[in-house]
Image (cartoon, each protein chain N blue to C red):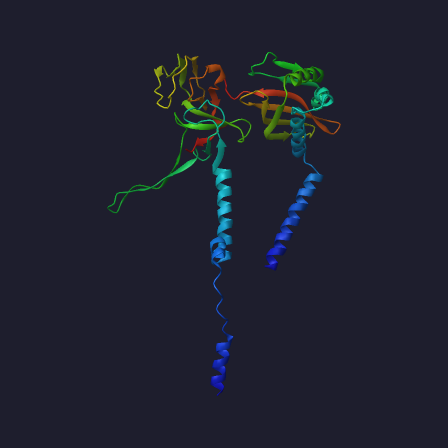
Length: 166
Length: 205
């Protein structure tokens, strides 16, 4: 029994060490995932937020994008098909924020591929957005291009991916 | 005399019979806990393999497959449905095999209900395959036409809305997917050609 306990403790110690090292020295893929997780959190909001938090919503969200970001919305039922620049994105985020009481954004199946230069990355992911009063969630696959600026991964391009190939 | 003493020693060396484990222990961990532990480990490994590699548990959301699959229904996607299948040998009963044990590749068939992935397997569309690669497909007044012939669809139990889709020819490895609920308006019902690479597997039940 002692041997089993020692073995269990050793396995636990190894697992904790590996986990700790991974947390300390994040790989580029893990850093991208981490960053996108924060982006989803920044895009979500609840009904009981303070007016100050509401005002800073657009700025918080825009900080995840490069100044020359391009968002292409093809195959999505919206009037806007392309958004160019962080400022435009910030304005639209503020307008969108004013129209909803709450929004839940989840990013799933994040599949990052970091280029050899370790400064750019391509990510495929699925976004699920649930707004108030919406019966069904919006599900959309996205392709993101990320660029590393000042040690931070920022989204430089966002394209919607169509599943139905018309 | 010495033999007698030896016999006594032998009798004393035998361990006393262990008392039987209490009934609750027998029910919880069995008569042999080590064996129970090994069985439990094997069961956990088998379940992990089955539900992470072969069967994907899903919960249906939405009404596009209604009434065949209803909102919030639980089911499984068999990821190995379109992989190799074993075809058993056929025995004629008189000492000869009519066919050997063989391995076949199962193809996607019309009428199969499949899971279609987005960027990964955590979010999927659940739809029915009605068009296969190379076929011409059109929808006129809610009736599906494959290569100019009307398709019989016994799984549709609701009156069809008058959908209209112009004829298209499916490319290689392209399938036409659609839901069973044709009562809803066409624009709000996801349907059309998809790349075969997106098909995760076939629904189990």
